[in-house]
Image (cartoon, rainbow over all chains, first blue to last red; front, side):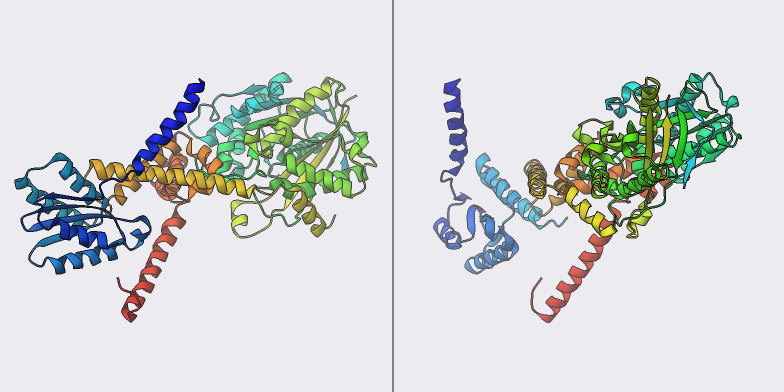
Length: 134
Length: 331
Length: 151
């Protein structure tokens, strides 16, 4: 009983703290080109918390999660990032989204190790999903 | 003016029927019946309310060995618009009917009228009382029953109960009705329908004071002065008013309130019970039985009522209240 | 006793509502309801194709469904007596107001009873919600036209 009294709070706090570890904040999947550049652009923005970039050929999906207090300006910051990427890569088709669903799906793509030929469709699908209004 | 009944009409019997929650009342052992279904297996709450009134009357008549055909008058009322449950019960009882509205004071106002009819010789047997049904009243005066509003500690719970008394010519073995005071409509500027006790206490005070004065009596002449439904806070306020007028607190011992005691210490019911059925249920079961057992020799029953409607509250009006008192003795 | 004297007596005798306790209870229950709402949102985003922008609709519908079940079983009023504003303010409170009115007035038939009374409590919410949305939009439109803010 006494052992449980010590172990239980210890276990609970450990499991809670495990989430505080430095998880991968920046993920790129697909073609590895420009990885360092993209990472630099995103790391420069103070409001970006985590990102997952999916790229293939000429299309790039940048899914970001904005830091909590900056979420008030989510749409503005999203547009800002979009503009930055459009300037940097004018000949690429870049889509930036701060939506959680897009971020989650992008991580899923990385987790499932989706094959290259399917990547383009997936990116297109996510782009359309993000544009839905109702 | 106080009414003195020279012929001393008798309170022959009382019939009291209550709903499922009222089984938890400390007075439930005195009730004639408590039902498990607050609708009495009828389709609507209002129909159940009517059935309850009929059942209470049946109990009262049966105890005296009488049937509807033997009764001269049926008077009573309830809190529902146009008093339809009582009207419809009157239809089924088939007795000459006087509907009376004094809100929760109807139990005594109808008893006073029945006693007057007996006094002038127009009635040999009369049924008088009142009733209330929780769901039907809440829907009309406040919110739908399932609505999640938060009631304050000063609120009271409308009981589901009906109490009717059979009044007849004087007979020694029954409690006698000696005198009565009709109350005025008294408004001390209270406007909170969730704090009716505060609105009704001044009316009770005025009526009791007037009765005692006119009868040349003091509080200690009574074994029990029972108000209808002031609730715990209303009773405190009533006692406060007596203390302010010079009465000492030891003298206030006979002063009790049916609503405050109805559900005991159960906090679910906040400040206590209320409703026309509250005073009727306690007066016509507990009090009559205790008087016949010899516990009380002289009682003053003071039913209190708040004369408001949902509309007057919305229109920003205060709450005028009334209290009617009747003095009953047992040799 | 004079009116003013009585009103003073009433003030002294009537217990003050436990404001601090009530605020704490409302805060906890309101927060809990919102947490459940967030869980529902996450559920829809992960298992279905809803984005943050579009998940509002199914979340609200689900919360109202929960409120409907709780109201029907007579549990919501118990939560309401405990939480006060904590359960009345969130959309579940709106659901409870509409559903409780619908249940209550069924005895008067579907058209006049339910139909005529279902928005008895919630009507003010709908009316003032729509009116204030109109005025806010109007003010924003004026400000945008002047050039002070952008859409």
